[in-house]
Every structure is written in structure tokens, then in C-alpha cells.
Length: 393
Image 1 (cartoon, rainbow, N blue to C red):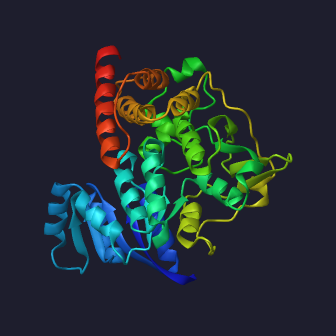
Image 2: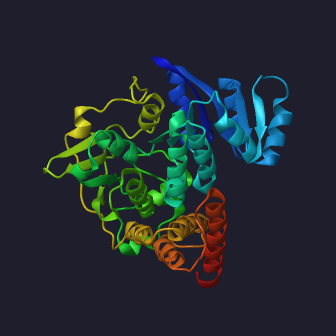
């Protein structure tokens, strides 16, 4: 489909699930130019993408992977290769870059988000950890870059939904925001069954096709905990006015309730191409490659309160957010270490929230005033979490 505005798009993490969806969206829209792509170590995938899309630039953050790609690619294509985090920084700051789709995982997404915003780019952000750990520096970067046209558009399906529902509303008229959760792969299990959950079970998500970590986070409901904090920062509502409802069909992605008692809901297929495309084409819309909803998909929708006794991660995240600062960094680090440990068989599924709560309770006196501060705090938080895991689990 022809899109009236020509935009050069850089896709960070193009070999991941968000990145691959973003490439599919860009390929479907004439007028959207895949200007740059990046990866960490996935040389084979990135090489295929370079050969297919012929972007002007490709950046590889891992130096060894960069060397491998350079030797294998040779001079067969015109794509210019950029090396390391410096190469990614150069790419997101280029004058010709219009939109940055940030699909990087964890702390890796923070620095390019900040640099892109400072340079006046539209950052389509699918990296919730960047907001949770570094909202203050992201907010400041957005303010700094707004005169040059900087925009921050959320790509998470829930936050894209809320953004679309309330962006023209007065914040004083909103009584609460509701984020929906599919419940993940193991929500209906008993407490006894949760003790025996395997990584293979967790990764069989019933409605979404996502990356490894976020699929596990979906099963523990930690993704909802992080999304509560993200919504709090993005939309300016207090934590206690952002709620979660279990919605197994994954058709309603977000709801807004207003002070007059009315409520709006945003619905769509469980396909990340929809919010990614919206972030690329905003404020306009274009025909999507995603299938539209049928009447059978919206005729029997179910919503109910989450069981935070069996799944306490949202409560743990709320507590961390109330304390703020470095506690949000400890939260993300603990979750990262816990998911890795569970995936490797070193931690039971039922121990994940216990471990995260223990780590967020640790003392850590660190500044969070800059990207460098946050990166150092995160590394120290990971170190503390790994020590806790070895000593007590």
C-alpha cells in the first residue's frame, strides 16, 4: 500500500520478534524505506535480511559477530556495516533517519532510545525496560529533542491501545486505565501444578508469538508489572489507578474509564504488526497485513480480575515503583536473572516472584541521573541478583 509520507526507518533488533514484524510492516508500505537494521549476534539472520531488504546501513553490536558478517558478506551488497554500540549510536543519530523502531531487549534499548530522541527522531518504543529503569532520562531526552520533532510512540500492544484511547483526552478526566493480560501459558494451573511448570510449557503462549523472555514474563505476569510502571510514566496516572484484567482472548488490549462513568476499549487482532505500523504511520493509518477481527472473535469476550496470590509479580512491581529510583532497576535485573535461571533449570517457576521480591528488597545506593548511571546501576543489580541466586536458591 502507498503511504503518502516518505519515512526512513531504522529497526533496532531486526532479528528478534519485534524486528521481524517491523520488517514485515515496512515491506508492506510503499513510502517507508528500511534505512537501517541492527543485530547483536544473529549473523545468519541479519545476512539474509541485508540480502533481502538492501538497507543503506546495518549495525552489529557484538564485535566478533561484526567481523564474521563483514568477512561473509564481502562486497556483494552496497549496505554499509557499522560496528558496536558506537555504530548503533551513529545510525540512530543520522539526519536521514526519521523513525527508530526500538525492539532491543532490556538495558540495551535505553541508550539508543535516548540518543534518537535527542536527535529529534520518532522513537517507536517496544522496550518496556527502558521506560521502567530510565524514564527520567528518556523524558528529558524527549523534551530536548522536541524542537527538532522528537516523538515517543509506544509499541507494546497495551500502551499503543491506551495511547490511542486517551491522547486527545484531559488527564484530569481519566479515572483509571486498564491493561489486559492473556494470562500466558499456565494461568489456569493450581498452585501445586505451578511448582512443576517447565520452560517448554511457559513458551507455549496461547495467543501471542513473542520472544523468549517476554513469553516467560507473560506466564509469571511480570510483563504486566512492568507495563503498569510503563503506563504510569507514559500517561502520568498514579500507580493505584492503573489496573490489570485477565482477558484470555487477547482481543481487548487496553481500556480507559472516565470520571463520568463511561469507558472506552481498544480492540484488535493479537498481531504486533498493528501497533508497530501505527507507530510508523502516526498520526495517519494505513491498511494492515494483519487479519481484521471477525464477529465470532468479539461476541464472547471474557474479563476477570487476576489472582495475585498465585501470581504476585504485578504487586511486587507496584511496590518497587512506589519506592522508585534504583528499585525499578533492581526489579528489571532480578527478572532478567530469574528468567535465565528458570530457563536453565536453576530456579522453579514458583520461585521466580519470591526471588524477584528478595532482590528488590536489597539495598543499592546508586545515582540514576544519566544513561551511564543507569547502566552501572543495572550491572551492579545483576551482580547482586546472581549472588543472591547462588547463595540462597
